[in-house]
Image (cartoon, rainbow, N blue to C red; front, side):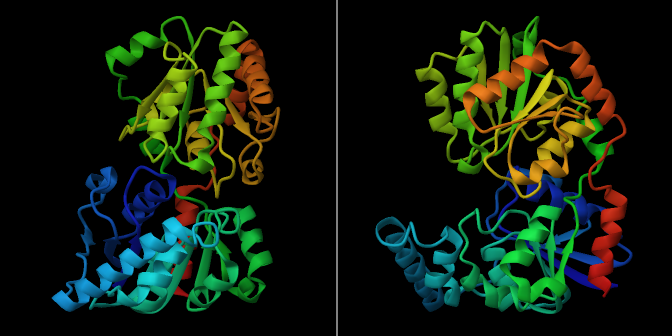
Length: 385
């Protein structure tokens, strides 16, 4: 039995987090002794960690070590706020100022997996004792603001660099060609049976009442800059001005939730746009949708699009590179430029064309991006090789 450790920043409700939970639950407990180090505890998905997984506790620090780590964090906050915010990614600056004071785990592992960029990757590369190390890539590191040269020595310590889409694989090969022989692709792993089962849970009555006789639009994403929620609000304003009777559910938590709710109120859209915040089970909201809309500026894979496809929902998405791995414009969804007028036009086109909706639904029936069984097999080959 191999002892495997996964390291992730948190288990809040994001794509990487859900994919990790799917992967770790599908790994055979007879073959792997599974360990998980969650750097920031308290995420809503922690309750979904399988019982056969050992959740590692944070290393203990003596008083002097705590003081040094606190000093590093204070230096980070000062430099982030006043000096280096525009020149370094948040995680890079944190590691530059505080990384030397972080402690790893005492145990040794056969396999260690950094399931996110940034600090989880830096920790696995430099603080974890393992015979084999892997780094999962679930975002375009260049678009996300990471410095390629700074990250080079960390990825150099990895046996395999695993990308969750063809586009990310290509981006990594172009930006870090020295690692091309180590770069592999494993799609984000989602169990479609679980998604379809969870989607059958009923909506709360007060939410269900909002959907009567109206077009239902749903977007599920973290309330963060890359998800481009202001575009959804501006688009909703155009939809109302053009007479569409709809309710748009925005499902997700994050740093911009208060700002987005403020935009909704400012534009007087509270009757038709609902920023619901976090829902541990977002799938009933996708199931209730007539149209699923993704407004992202960029994605690593676009997990919620894959989930909407599993539920055979007509989809409208903004035009970011990786979306073409999942959607063919006019075949199984619509892809729109990233501006309110274009997105509103695409939504109205689909809303008023039932034949087009049915064609997209029919195209999606039985369609699964990244079959869970096959992707698990590819991942296990990397763990074993």
